Length: 459
Image 1: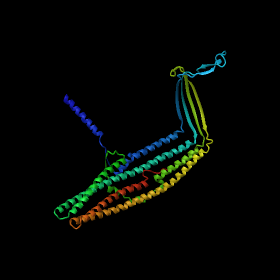
Image 2: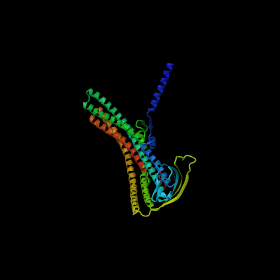
Image 3: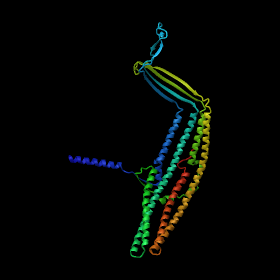
Image 4: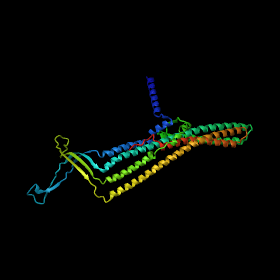
């Protein structure tokens, strides 16, 4: 019996330990760039907040519309007069023989009162309400366009962060390969020096190169960890999670090598920045209409129904308690007559603000043209530079190979070999950076031209 209890206790302990491990398990992600974009657009913190802003705008739209719909309110009141108010009336009212000028104290109302009232209000005409309903569409459009802009920025940020991870990974791989090669050369040169066939300076020069490479490698490894954390943050993935990218830098650079994109055009008025400026201009125009509408009359109607009862004791829940009904219906018309120029001054302010928004709109149109032209030029340069750096890398590799052969044949010095190696390492980094620039600059141009996330609506 004791053995059975011990066995059950052991099973429960193992189960608890397993559950504890499951609850602390770190989630792992393996994402291509396309998968990362899809995931990030749904989980990025800014993207989710922008989506919430759209939902808030929808509620605000209904809030504005509901102001013109029937409004019903109810009210229940109960009063217990702990000390009843006393009034005074001429004593002769009760006793004709009473002395003139004397008064008798009386208490008119019962000690306890209860009432219940329901009121229905209806807006019949209000110029401000009409303008408010017109503004509801604009307010929603503003939040939707802000969401589009956020998504475009998030998409660009994901591409750049993903590219940085690939750049750091490829840099680590190349530095490791270079360090292995230099260490092998250093080992071979050390043996040659020990045999008295070369100078110690050649060994020392290779030691300097190896130490520099090792320092660069350690720093790049740390940068890779930071790049992964930045990508997680951009995607909305917890920093403690594990993430692995599945694309390769060179493959992605070739996918993003697109000459056709350079000839693609878009009307500046269809860019998201212009649409946002248009929304602001529309909103400023509505503000002008709103101020003008305040000079119009406001007409409302109401119906009121209620019941009330009174008693010296709390008998309001009794069937014998008497209640007395009352109901009122009416309309209210408010007509602005004279404001000493206040409304005119406010309207003038809004009209000037509207003119400013039109200037901003024209500026946004020209900025959109400049942004597209600049992004297209940057992408063209990235493509040209990628081809140039690829050729430079081939040349640097041949130069380094020749100097390596010459060095071990005793024809070239260690300094010449070191210069060739430094030139090769720089060419390698330039080539990696050029591939990244192709990816990043295409993302910037796509952001300026992109209509896949947003199709302009016909107003």
